[in-house]
Amino acid sequence: MSGEAAFIAALRGLATHPAARGLADDCAVLRFGGETLILTHDAMVEGVHWLPGQDPADVAWKLVATNLSDLAAKGAEPVGVLLGYALDADDTRFLEGLRDVLATYDVPLLGGDTTGGTGRRTLGLTALGRATCDPVPSRSGAQAGDTLWLTGPVGAAMLGFEALKADDQAADTRAFRRPVPRLAEGRALAPQVTAMMDVSDGLLIDSTRMAQASGATFALDRAAIPLPPSLPAARIDDALRWGDDYELLFALAPGVTPPCPAHRIGQVLPQGPHPLLLDGTPPAGKLGYLHD
Amino acid sequence: MSGEAAFIAALRGLATHPAARGLADDCAVLRFGGETLILTHDAMVEGVHWLPGQDPADVAWKLVATNLSDLAAKGAEPVGVLLGYALDADDTRFLEGLRDVLATYDVPLLGGDTTGGTGRRTLGLTALGRATCDPVPSRSGAQAGDTLWLTGPVGAAMLGFEALKADDQAADTRAFRRPVPRLAEGRALAPQVTAMMDVSDGLLIDSTRMAQASGATFALDRAAIPLPPSLPAARIDDALRWGDDYELLFALAPGVTPPCPAHRIGQVLPQGPHPLLLDGTPPAGKLGYLHD
Image (cartoon, rainbow over all chains, first blue to last red; front, side, top):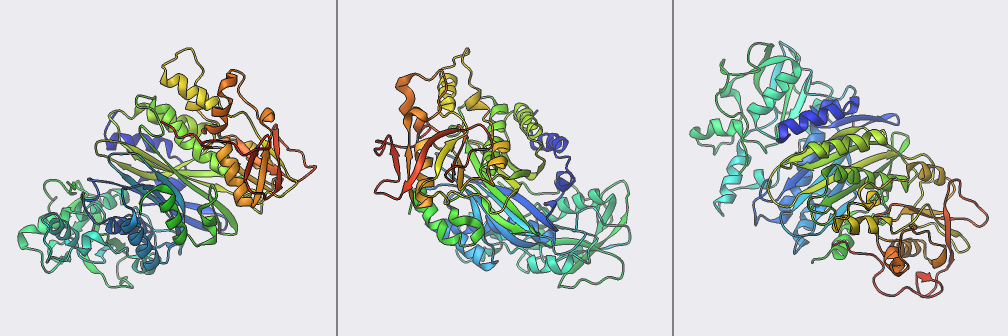
């Protein structure tokens, strides 16, 4: 057996506890004491999730921010992180970025582990949060008739990544280097939404996942999807397939208006032959961008 | 800045939340929902923590068991794990070992992440537990007059590692491949001990750490330290410096007897010039074994 899909399918057979949510959600949701704990763990690999030579302060920021984004999708308040760190020749900039992101979001560092060795480095982070509403939003609650929304543009991280790779000093690359977890938006939205997730792998692939989890078809209106002003028209299809923007995708019951700035990008239909329609037809090609 | 000691010292400056215990303990200890959550994260690196070519089922077992051992040192009941997994050419045996260890200790898999890429693989695991007594044992409570105890022998993992490296098919290598977290012992001991930790890096180095955390001197009686029957006398010094046995080291107030099988190996003295004495003198050389 090999391949990520096969491995995750096999893991699902082991993850039978309801808190695991079938490994089909952004986080585990565990009752503990009289409250609900939200748990997520993401790893980043050198050369896969960050560019060789990229500022380690940005790597630290992104490692924490992307995990906090998973908490945001549950409307959770962060309570702490555990770090799995692979030592580098110089760790100063990583520590600066870590201090920065923890202070910005007021998240305590609770513990972790450091490892040595040579070769490709892998960094891991576990983030813990406290649920702020019950039930905790999932990907699976969207219903026919709901409206679909996005908190902000997709494609800015793609432009940032490409500028960074091209060593374009004039470009604004922050969207790729320093993603912003939508924590305040997630908390405001959590009691209202019928389904929510963060867009980490690309709008089209993540919309498909939410539609499938909900047993529905999502119909997106291409012209309504927010995009960065600097995006060339020829790159719109790419922007819909790139990830790393960490905006929140959510569904609202008919007539409900979002409690925070958001863009209405489509609606939920009864389950049809295709989980996702873009301007009425299933989008062609790969729906999520594989970072290289 | 480089090096593990310098990095951890810098991290301590960030980990100011009391739940982090100054990063000087085996676990974070966090009040949550009216109960106490025990958290630990350990990573294992190919070629550092396991031998190239070693059975991935054993790697999976050890990854989970060593984290559960940290929970055992707090007397905690495991409530779940999150896995950070680097995909391999064939993941079947890893999954078998994972299923085995989770079933053996009745621990749910709650979530995690998988990563791809080539080169050195790193696996991470976060384990969560529920405290079973208050206060939760730490490394820092041992007091002059206390007795020092160990739940079982040290050196068996060293012999197992060496036999495995030498491809000695006749040898029993389980102590290295399949360490046993002392969960039941930890729970029984937690309300009784003045300090406790698991011996993961070597008895002498870990005793030194507990003595320093407690502001005391530990005096160990070499002849009283339990060793595997097959250990050659010439290897005793090595066995005291090797880790990976995951027995519990603990201190008891005078007159208190342990509620589980254990070996009395020494006593706690007022803080002297040396944190550790072995038969009355500070042990020479490196106190913890660096695995190669």
